[in-house]
Length: 194
Image (cartoon, rainbow, N blue to C red; front, top):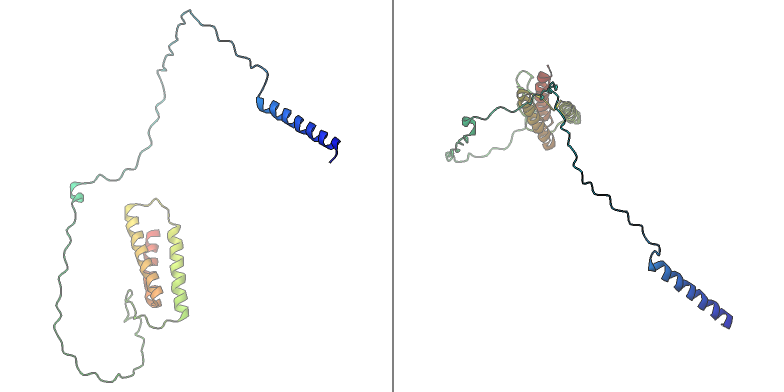
């Protein structure tokens, strides 16, 4: 290093130190202090604003209140206990070898709506029809307006129960039962929309 390089470095350090010292020391100019306002010693009369005589009345919107509860509704319903049924003891009969028989589908007049099947093998087409029917009912229920009367709420609750049972039956493999329950839900929903 040369002597001249050292001098330049010292000057740079000194200039940097002076710059930092000036920058950190704060502002040197005086801030102007605002003059206080003069005190008012004379009394001032306050004006009374007269109220208008014929102001328009705004009617409150009617509120839809729930029915008032009664004392009879507040009582807790008593629950009946289940009575235990004692099954008579039966001695098992000798077991005969199973006889193979062909499954014969009963006629539509014999099977009633609402009778659930045993949940045997169902065709994929039946499963798909049940799933489509459940999906269409869910879509219709979701489109139903939120403001409904109490009678409609009870019916919608029944529809939702049938729909829930239909979904459970479809998951368990009972496509025919699911289709039957979904049809019941559809019919109740059709009655609601009339």
